[in-house]
Structures are given as structure tokens and as C-alpha cells.
Image (cartoon, rainbow, N blue to C red; front, side):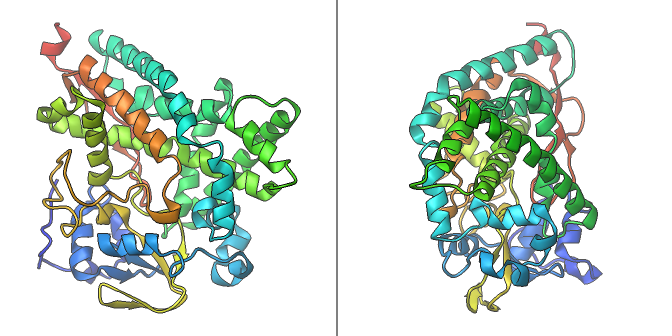
Length: 427
């Protein structure tokens, strides 16, 4: 990886006439966006993209936007057609801007309170035993194959199944349907991309339609026969006249929970595995306490966050100055979380992977009222899985370059194939 220092005075990557978002989808930035992020933080921390949004790349500015929803609200529903006309013609955009992460108080406060009743620390904590059991089974199966001489795609064998089965168990999605629904998420996530092509938006619309049909059937089933799962709990909230979810709100909440429930965590696991393979000397962080394992996971989330561009679409409610640049009222802002995580003003030596670092908190899960509800669950899954992987597979090596999907908002994987070193296999 080539790291560009913060005081870089090298050539302007925008002199080519190409937009930043186009550059992020092209070599070399599509595999390593961090040098381009460093240039942006230094020379264009508030960059007006040709695609209609101001790209915010410094940690302090990103945090300011996240923590001041009154200055940077989502799209008001009564102004949807005027401020974001794409949402009128495309279901994928409509879901994005009316979801929990895109909504404003008081609606946001009400929705978060309703779902928070059943997405509590207690409920997440009750999943711990099942998560640890699942982690043990997945790692054992992968270890057996590796010790038998196979190369194993850990993305498919471990990283995706772990959070996929956890969120499915939580929601109540049957085993037979999980893989089919899982493949819809990358297409759905593309709608977060500020430079999404018409083809990508059409694919996102199709994915949302397919998932919407499925979720409607699941809701109808749970209404007839409630179970001990989150869909049943949300249906009961929907049907309670004293404080209810509308049909659209229930549907959008289920979209959000499914799309955010496993792909980002799977990417976090993949990134942690890459960090461990590249830096085996840091393995001791996964040999001690749960707090040490959590520190390793937290540094992964800062160093190479799964979500590079925050999903919420926000607009400046009034003229606002960020890093000396005036953002006009009504301008759309998009938050570059990947760039903020490497800001040297918040993280000394930002391009070094240093678990346990003190100072600013990563913004990988957002901040303020839009802090991710699933952050605790994601951290629990990573800290349950990573020490087991390190303990049972201490000699992992890449069997080939990781497969990365070409996407701006989510730096996710298509494959992460590994092998065991000869010395470990002989044990």
C-alpha cells in the first residue's frame, strides 16, 4: 500500500478532469482509496463533486455533520420530490431517504424508540452463547478443510455466514431463504453510491422489490403465527393502536435491518483477517482478554471501515462553513467515513494499524442520533470470531489476491482465499 502523507504537494489528481468519485472506481484507488483521501483532506476537504454532492473528508467536519442533525437534516418527506427527485421514480432511493438513517426528528426519535424496545443490550447479550457456538463451528469446519490441504475462501466459509445467520436468527428468516436473500444486499447498497449508474440503480430497485415481496410474506406469516423473533415484535408494534408503525415504516425498517445486518460486519471480519495476515506480530491482541480483542476489532473499523461513505443523504439547512469552505443552503453533503478514519488530526500515525490507540473514536458506526443500532451486535460477532480464528489458524497466508467488489460506499469482498503455511499444516 502506498500512503500519501498529509502535507502532500504532489500532482493534483483532479487535473485529469475526472471527478473524485470516478477516480475512486478506477485503478489504483478502487483497491486503495487512502492516498486519494489524503489528498482530499489536505487540498479539498469539502469537495463539490460533479455528481451533485459536497464530499466531506476531515474527521472534525464529518463528526460535526453527524452530531448536528438540525444543521444537516435528511430530506423532509414533504419536500422529497423537490429536493431529491430520484426518490420519486426509484424505490431504492425512496427507501434510502425515508429509512431510519435518513429520517429526521421527531419521526426518527419515534422509530428509533420503537425498534429500540427489542434491539436492546439485553437482547443482543442474550445472543452471545449462540454467536460463540456458531463461531466455533464455522472456524472448526474451515480449519479441517485447510489442514486437509484445501485452499479456503474465508469470505464465503466464515465471514459472511457468521453475521448472516446471526441477523437471520434475530429477525426470524428461515435457513432455506438466507442465501437467496443475502445476494440482494450488494445491489441494494449500490444506491448509497453518489455516482451510481442508471444500471446500478435499476439493479437496486429490482433487489428492493424482491426483498419487499419476501418481507411482506414474512410479516403476514408472523401476524398469523407470532414467534420469538424481531419481525414478530415489530409486527406487534405495528398492530398496537397506541403507538404504531405504518405499513411503509415497517417495511422500510425490515429493509434497513436486513441490508445493514450482515454485509458490513462480514467486510469488517475480512478486513480484520487481512490485518492479521499482514501483521502476524499483532496476534497477541487476540490471545488475551475480550477487551484486547475488541481493541483489535475497533482498529480494523478505523483503519479500513466497511462503509466508506455514510448511507444517510443530508442537506445543509442553512449556509455552513466547514474547513473554511462555505456549503450553501440546500446543498447535499456526503460523509467520507474512510477518509475521516485516516485523518492525522484525529489519529496520530493514521496509516499504521495500532490496536488500543487512545484518542478520538472511529466514526465507522456514525455518531449522534444516527449512531448504528447494530454496532454492539457487530462488535460482539467480531470479538467472538477473531480470537478463535487466530487460535485455530495461526499460520494463515493468502492463496491469491483478495477479490474486491468495485464499489464506493462499501469496500466489500467477493473472496478471501487463504491457505496454511506448511509448518502449521504439519502440526
